Image (cartoon, rainbow, N blue to C red; front, side, top):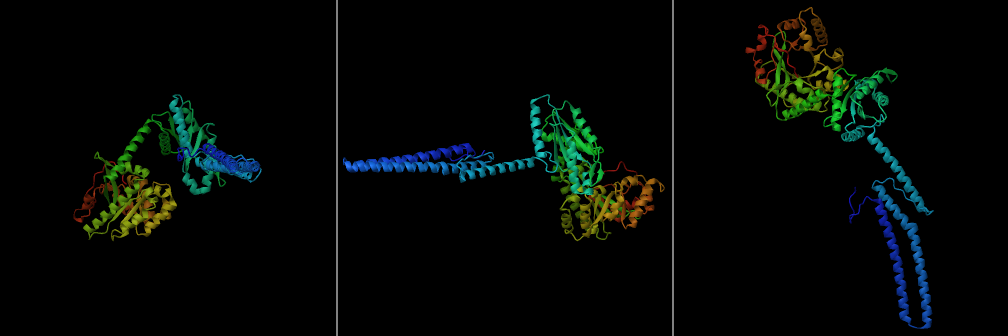
Length: 593
């Protein structure tokens, strides 16, 4: 409601305003009549007083009074006509304009004077009608998706709140929220173009409408995500039947640019009533179940259950602890040596993040890195790792000035690679010292590169032009490993530990795969690092396969900077001794960052 007027009158009430204007006009008209009557009365009194009982004077007075009265009557009639034809219509237009300004677009004015005022009133009514239609369109576009015509997230959440409120008053009312995501939509969008991707989403929206009842709601929540609100369900099984119906409908192909395309979706179902079933919580639960379905192989559905609830609570607790841990400087770096296999000399280190929580437990990256990716904390954490590792390398160079220059290897996550400030932050870091940029190697996995291949190629090309080296981590585990070596600016190939673990003899299948990888990399002028080296026989086979570098527990576990510095002392290098003294096979390898 708008603010009150000077005397507490509601300023947004057009009826009240119109009433005040009418009262004011009538009051002015009455006041005008009273004034004219007062003049007439004064003239009579003056004439009577001035001429006394003279009969001629009395006749003149009567004539004068009659003339004055006739003039007053004419003036009154003129005033009435002015008020009726001009002042009153103008007042009505003013009141209508104020009502429209206050948002009352249903305001209409009726003036029947057969003149310009009536034309003006008609134009005013046409204007308010046009404004009303425009407002209705704007309101519809604000709560509907322009591409599919479906409700958007705003309208979906509004309807969900109403359903939750209604369900709170009726113990027998059941409903479900379904969160749906198109599998590999980005790949389809990049392959066929964005216009084809939009067409697919529009066609998908129409097909989904055939899978639900008239009173249910289907909304496009954003991107390739859709939400469904299924009301008045007899039981949870009915929501599952809808998911099955959607899967069945999607068995028919879509047509994009004349080609048949088969699409699958992952669905998460949250069935209500649930304890503390807030609208946002229900949608989040359905989203959690959807990701479980996606991780289960895509093209399927999952129903949110108590196990997922506990996982959500654990994740929320971990998220809070992770954020606080970074603020409290609970993170540190461990360094694992990378050695030249022919000599055993240390040529570099890989910097690995470690988190020591308040309970004293060392949390490995495999536990907190996915969460950091999801929450965006990977950006500050990754920037800290990069800076700390580079400064440590500079310190080692000062401590061991005569030693062969080392390199430091740091992992980049998918989100870091896509971050707009990556190149700038790396550039500023390199300017902190006169150390050659080639001493810094950035590792990126195949899956992170293929997330957005074009942007990744541009970023990696820029970084490489600055003098840095780029390594493909976990090589061989992706679906396009060989093409990566040709399409992207790569300097080093790091063979995944799974291939190294299969090394038994020089004639084994594992050794043949490694031989092919090392041969290809050598022909392309790339260095090769074998990860996960744990036994002396693996070292011998890798030397035979012309693998240049090795890294693993056989040489050294990840350790803090002080411990890692000991292997830089040539006179007591544990790495050198490892080539003559077989090491025990360590326990299960640690997950590294």
